[in-house]
Image 1: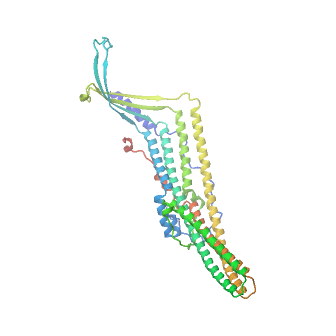
Image 2: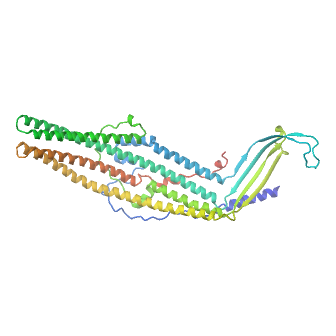
Image 3: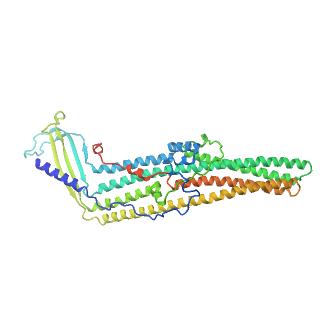
Length: 491
């Protein structure tokens, strides 16, 4: 007996010692081309921005309390975020399922049988039974099995599952970033429409006063009916513009409702014209984006998972060793089933090696290597896209900052032109068409100036999103399942 247990213990010790070996390549993140600095520089001095984007609540950079409230509601109630959260829980459960392969598996049960043997059945003594017999058989078996992970196939699977778990965590952060940035874009677009509607409504009031003036002049025989008709046409056209802008605003309001998890019929955003200036967003270095963007972290973790699968495939070339132990109690009477004389046990080991597989193992290794190669390409393309998005946002902010300055000059000039046109018309020097043209030009200039301000805020949101929203991939280091004694004894 001692010799048996000694041999079994020696086998377990050898398996544990060899378990430090894991076939397949160890993961190393591939290099990607990274520029030392951004091509486009932001339209503010480098000392102006804060040190970093606020962690998590990046939208507080815009200092809009109403936006803060909507973002908080979206994080709690948005259903797309809920889907990603449950997918993260699934990934964790999947990693724990894979990790269970590291531990022994214990099975037990209860078997009850009542049997009748016929007369003449041979017995161990060679003398057949002379009459039928009936007997009971009560059995309580225990079976313990463990596959020794000598060459790291299971451990590579756990490594892959943990990487996929971390990829799911990064995917959740990416969904949060996408939803919160989309909400901010819709919010600022709505506020821009509020400001634009205010501009149009002010123009309607001014044009209505002009119509009254022209009608009075027409009644006094000074102005023609053409002047009145032209002013009426302009006024109604401007009112139509305000109506169409309100329709666009309603669509953004409905979009915000869906993002914060509220039925559109029960949701409204109070009117408040846009009064924010684009904040200075700290951009850092291009290499920082590799650690800030959750979509890059997601593809990088997927790449690590694919690399581990190469080791899983290669482990099929090596033999598998299964250790087993069985035991239990068996008796014809249930009341006395547990006892020294009713116990039984067995110990065993099994070594199996696939000799011929028809090229299946080689194909599995090639399949895993191809998957890893594709994940590298996907990772590098994600990085390139990230750099592109940052440069697009920076160049957009530069252009829009310049456009905002020149457009304000255009607004000022249009206001002077309208004043001059009114004075010259009153003095009888020009026709009323000059006044109509000046009014149209002023409205167009004011609307465009408002649109540029809205685009600058939206582009600032795009820049924050392109930079990763203040997130840091170092948070993924704690996202993993670890083998514990508690898990080993869990049912």
